[in-house]
Each structure stands twice: as structure tokens, then as C-alpha cells.
Image 1 (cartoon, rainbow, N blue to C red):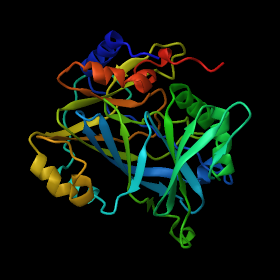
Image 2 (image 1 turned 30 degrees about the vertical axis):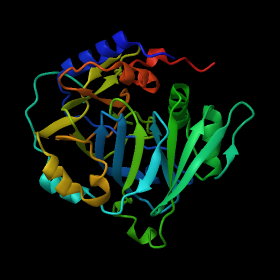
Image 3 (image 1 turned 180 degrees about the horizontal axis):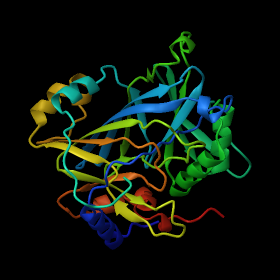
Image 4 (image 1 turned 120 degrees about the vertical axis):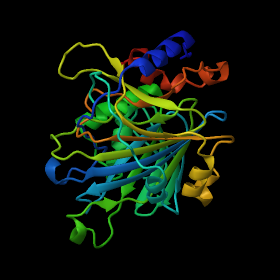
Length: 347
């Protein structure tokens, strides 16, 4: 499928003109084992994300730490990526230093409305290829390619990550877009049941992949029950120019409503000419990932319980910079994010 430069420009221009969405409540969990009722299964308590985007190279580094409630059993989650990902454990967690040097600062909103296994397996109609396997602390990370959603769901079930009807539909969405997947399976430590009442922080993981526009997998399967507690998402974005995180939203309460561009995250502080500060915060292995030249650091927050109706996040340029022909040529996998109507329905 060829990129459509006119459509892409119009979509991103419309996105950055949308007023910020006030804080909303949402939640979503990826593939989990089904040995317990939905209320008893592990759930995401908080999430910290550092996005380093090198626009000149078209490379994103997605550094993530998550904490789960009731994490005393085998479970997992899936991170979709628009290109082949590289997965690695981060030895030195950067988030304490990031929060100290680049704290989130609330800003007043306008009046805009908003919401807020190994080898190859599968069915006869499709296949799943395991491209790499990495041990990341208590997690095992499988990098997968799949051309069939049913085969991918079967692979997850065969590897103790039983899917649900909601997650099956979620998987089908990304299979149609030709995405890759990082399936993270958590094997609990021996004392996990004794610590069940407290959130358990996962090891920090880095997922790197090629993309001309920074991307965050915000779209989630519908939860099987209504979450009672909001979860905290904190995002630090590092790049060469300021950005605006935007996503398409279809109102789930209005059947047949058209999607519109909104800003799902609450913006915090923007730090210009911050290269020295971010180098001091990241140190060692992560500092080597920074783009060349002067850098901008931005902070964002989210405290939703549900993400119903939201598609994935794209970090559009705040200054409406046009994409080069080379960047447009690499936007193919993101067409379904810009406009889900461009993705062919499953036969």
C-alpha cells in the first residue's frame, strides 16, 4: 500500500490543531492467562515511558517500565511495532533521574472537549515466526511476525498467554496493518504470592524500531470488566523538535460516529536546548541512543481507566514541518493509524 502524502499532511495538520483533551479515565490489558476471573487477574497499575526519536535516522527507542497488580501468576502482554523491533534489557533504570530533572508540570487547559514457544507455528491458513527470544529479568521477550490473527492467538495460547475475544480482535487489527509484535511473558518469582497486595515493577525494557514519526501503542483491547482504579502513565519525549501527541477517537457511545483527532495526553513542561540535562539524566547505554544536535525534552501524563475508542498515538511536529519524500515512503505501516479506513478488512 503506497503512502498518500496529501492525506498524511492533512491528517497531521488537523491533529495538531485539535485542542487538548481533559483528563479521562481508561484502561486496557494485553493477553492474559484465564485461570482466574477477570477481577482476579493481573492488571496494569502504572507505566513509565521514555521515547527517544531520531528523526534524521527514522529510528525510535521505546523504553518502558510497567508495574502490575496481583502479579503472582504467569501472564503477558504484547507490544505492536510498525517495523522489525530490537529488544534489550535496560541495566540502569532512568526514570527516577528523569522525574527529578524533568518533572511533570501541570498546565491549564483550554475549553476543548475530548476523551480525555520457539520456531514457527500456526494454523493451515497462516503462520507465526519467532524472530528472536530475549530474557529480560523476569520476562521472556519473543519478537514475532504473523500473517494471520488466528495463528497468532494460537501461538500465544500455546505459550501460556491465552487470548480473549477482545484481544483477538485487537490482534487482527495489527495483522492487517502488517505490524511486528513483542510478546512479553512474565514468570513470577517464588515469593510473588506473598507480595500480591503490592504493585510489582517489571524490569525496564528497550524496544527499538524504525519509524519516521514517533509512535506509541495506545490502542488496547476492550477490558472484560470495568477497571475501578485509574493507572498512571508518564511519558518523557526526547527529539530534535517539539511534538504534539495525537490519536484518532471514535466515540464508543455513539454508534456510527466518525473518528476525530484528539490529544489524549495531558501536556507538562517543555525543555528547549536540553542536551546536557538529558545526557546527565540518562547516562551510559541510553545516552548513546540520543540524536545528534540540540534536543527538546517534553513531559506528558495520562490517568485513564479505559481507552475505549482511541487509536494509537503519533507524535506530530508542533511546527507543522512537511515530511520528506523519504519519510513518506516509510510511512506505509502507519497508514492504518492515520486512517483505519485505508486498512483492508479481513476476508
